[in-house]
Amino acid sequence: MAENDDQIPDSLLPYDDWMQEALRQVAVSALRHAAQNGLPGGHHFYITFKTAYPGVNIPDRLRAQYPEEMTIVLQHQFHSLGVNDAGTSMSVGLTFGGVPSTLTIPLAAISNFADPEVRFGLQFDVTVPEPVKAEELPAPEGDDVPTRPTHDGPADVVSLDAFRRRQKD
Image 1 (cartoon, rainbow, N blue to C red):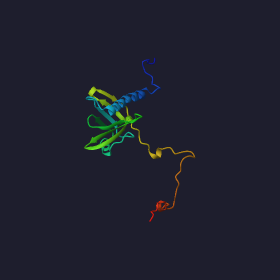
Image 2: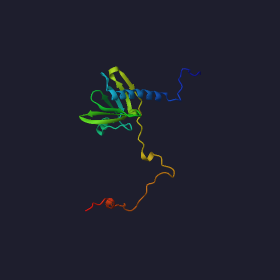
Image 3: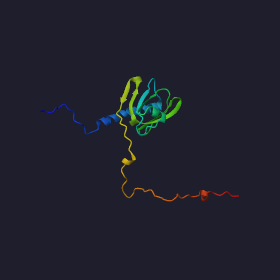
Image 4: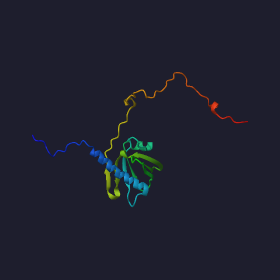
């Protein structure tokens, strides 16, 4: 039986990851432009992100309402839009139910970025890492591991009176 020459071999280079990162930079550029210049004309952004992704900082009530994924719209009523210098996270001020909130979103948490005005959209593969449990962490090794002193008796109490300046009469 002859092998099929049309079959594409698996790559040893992460081209898919590189392409995702390059396309993510398009979203970063659009966000930075909007942060510096505002949104021109009818441009507006739909940004969908994984709320359980590490580093996502949103109000607890929003996380309860959107435990997996949330879409925000940046159009007319947003403020303080910014992308950090490293281009790894964004922050934006929005109002939900009359309550102003600031959201911080790692760009790696974004699963969709779209500008419907020009029918532009990007979709990203996002895997939310499982939280590491304390018992799964490797035990520290070596002599330079800081140890916590143990104390079986009552705690030492130091009076601060000895360190206070005394007022002159």
